[in-house]
Length: 176
Image 1: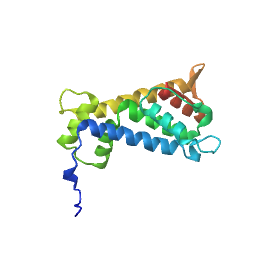
Image 2 (image 1 turned 90 degrees about the vertical axis):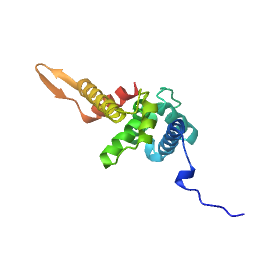
Image 3 (image 1 turned 90 degrees about the horizontal axis):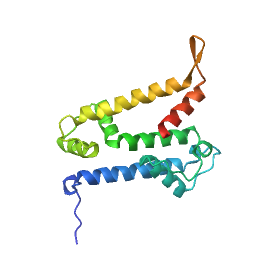
Image 4 (image 1 turned 180 degrees about the vertical axis):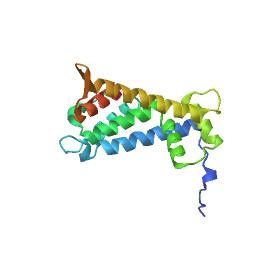
């Protein structure tokens, strides 16, 4: 029996499968990162099942936790969780569009159809602009909120509190 090579054209994934596999890969990659010792505040590895649950909860934006996030995770672990929440909340296809634009690549009609399905747009025209607007609005609102919550009034002058507070406020704002 002769095995033939599988070409790219032999594998046809529907938009729903691309989205499903994309979320599954992001969740698994997040779990691997969260189980690394560098992601833990005390330098020990989090068991993979807890890391998988935390990653899934972050991507699905449910807010469920099995470990105390502020005490269990280092800044790296919190950053991973923030990115997973953003990928799940805004949609990884939105970030895919941003990456394509940064790399200067064209988005094909098939890719536009997948973006349409992931963003619930009525038609594929304008989904790239919609994705960029989603990203830009989220970035502006989250940045403004982090700065507002980090600045405290001192008479008529405003003073920025230390950077660790800016990180904590940004993290808390995104996970809330």
